[in-house]
Image 1 (cartoon, rainbow, N blue to C red):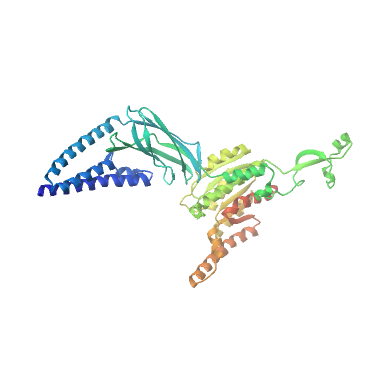
Image 2: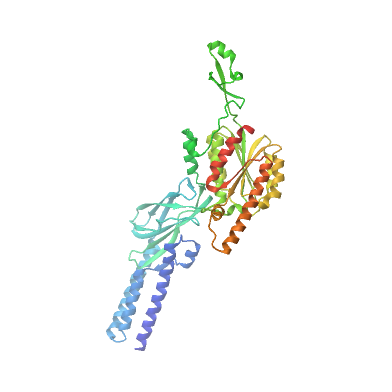
Length: 476
């Protein structure tokens, strides 16, 4: 009887060990993208739930063996059968399992938008296997369609299509795919990785910019919120000859063409083209702050994309410069088709842990851009920046036209409108008001220097900057 008690304890120990090897890796397999942590906790070969149930049954039979002697014989027979079946299953897994995987990624992802990924898994064995797989998604990527499970016949393949959403911009890497293959007797499973590591670009989500662009091409600027001012005649760049309209100035009349046509012909002018616009974006640590789920830096990138498109559409050249711990430069490019060049340049911009050095930024612009240009500084300017900002801007204005795009925190704006119900809330509101006053002081000093500026929240910044650009083109 004492021997039977040992059998029970032995069976319970086996069940606990088997349950640990099954439940812990399974939990990680289902809930995480199977990174290195999951791989270190799991085993290459591990028992399945069917093995667990078999061991549990053996434990119950062992308990009956304390009262029924014949149950002990049955226990040994079943244990032997289980060992034989398990060994056979392990042999098949060890010798027969062989897969090949090909992953097809889109040419690029849009930040925060789902992208379609295709995975082809080919079974090179002469036996069919039940498999589950979880692709090697980058950190922070989300897919509700993984893990996938199914049956792959012998020497056949399956193609799985799923969508993944990636939250980070820049170059991201897909690691090898994690596959769990069950033996033909379903007693054991084997976990391994197949495929290759692949990199893909994640661009800023410029879909809203494209929508605004389509409205612009349809000549509906009022739908964009962009005010296109009529400055006909202010520029000296000739556009075309046209019939005289009442109200045209005499200086516009082309007397030579009028004498040939025997009717008054006027010269038509349009705004100058081929001007340079330099977009200088702050990559300093301050821009890491989140605003409606997106960093202020990403909001500024979206504003830059719209402004770049509008400027290229106007026939101007657009250059990009990064400052604040980054030293990136894209010389001015021309033509709407250059949006691809700008996107390829901007997509991997990242913030740094460095403070924003406006003096250094101005020196870089003066060295790199000799031709008179419109320079647009985009950042989150605060009260403490007054001393470091004013002198560099004054120096830059000696050669270039300067405008400021200042992004305000939405959370601060909302806090200003909250009702006060306690002393702590009153103190908090006073601190916020002081913060806002300090920001306004910077804007007032820039205005006193005749430096146009836009100071608004993230959602309004793109259109506000575009309007500011259109209003200032004639000054370049």
